[in-house]
Image (cartoon, rainbow, N blue to C red; front, side, top):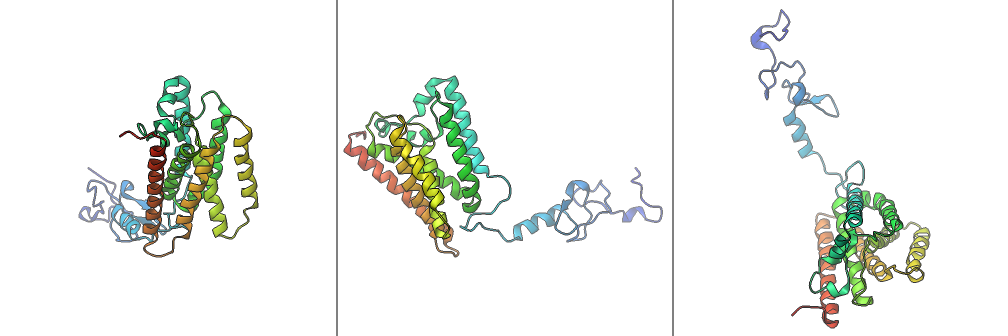
Length: 285
């Protein structure tokens, strides 16, 4: 079989790819000098690298961090988009199957028997109102595309989930036991609280955020069927989570302090839930 070797080059000296010996390659890795076939070539900052050198350079490259310790990544806010997709998918399922809403909504009376509803309800929206999900998804995108790159994907996801839990705790504390709630509003108000803390930590103006926050919070007292209790619980929880994330001292133990702090907040919410549910006779013995 001929590979088109120049006439002056002995066949025994034809450069072949170490990973694919049947492939001739005159392009060499800029790092180790070995031949690399097209399948094994990776574009590096300078020239071409083989698979092994490319992977090694990625392992040894310094890990870039966000201002608050998260792993810095380029591109779109993946967690924000994922949360939006989940909410949209759930909304379609709710529209097609009304029983889906009943199985996942939260009311304080479910606390002792199906406590997972305290989180699942945050991904549901009123199937009879397109404005409900439209407003929440817009708010999630508006807040997420700013906070997620600052905090990092994992920290942002935990902030959202713990805030959603905090919103349900607010409902448990301040609502009748039969009041059913759905919606991402509690988690979104948690993001509002987080944004406020981030701006304060950076000594930036918070006036516009306070006005927007006050206007949205006031709607819960004037428009029926809006659970202001979830807004309040989510807001306080999100602010507490953000304080842990942004004020954690820099250093090698920063992540430990941050995740430990978030875990502590979650534990406090669990304890408060147990106490409130017990006081209202909602726990199973």
